[in-house]
Image (cartoon, rainbow, N blue to C red):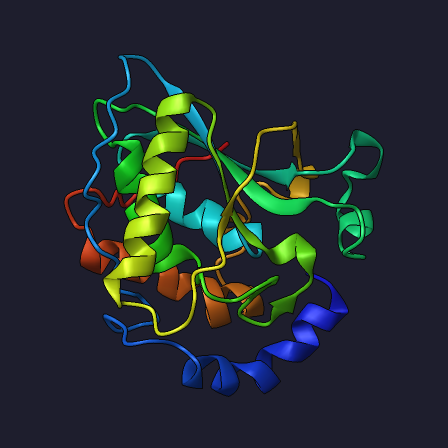
Length: 225
């Protein structure tokens, strides 16, 4: 976590709370159930989600039954600048993102989308999530198949028409370029650092909301890697 990120936690906590739409408690949103169901063939699948600081997004996906791996990293820029300190400048084109591997027989892609927008990321804040600002904190979906792209497009349209969010949906679909895993100390960060001030301020409530809103999908154990 950068010093800038840490300094903003206290100042923006109240402001962020005041700017959220109607929630299900604990910062969670009652995102609509997807109208379009994903139909993917058997076997493990991969999708990429960008939703601000990857610590919390990785933490959420790592507690979902059917997810076999969640890796923090960078998407959208070049390999030469895919390092945390460079990406933190906000001018490399990367987004902090999480590469999720999942079994569609246990959890579908459309369900992952609903969870992502219910407890993971605010789709209405442009280049910002919580206390973090910059293009590297944009919210984006990176489908890895045509089926994922169609499901993601349909769900973003459904979200925009739902009236759940009072501000425009700004999350975009980005074409896959290449995913670069972040440094080792960023991986499984929530599991390794449960009492980190940033985790306690912003991310622990996301996992708590996942458990409360999706008990049938929530998994108590943390899937590492």
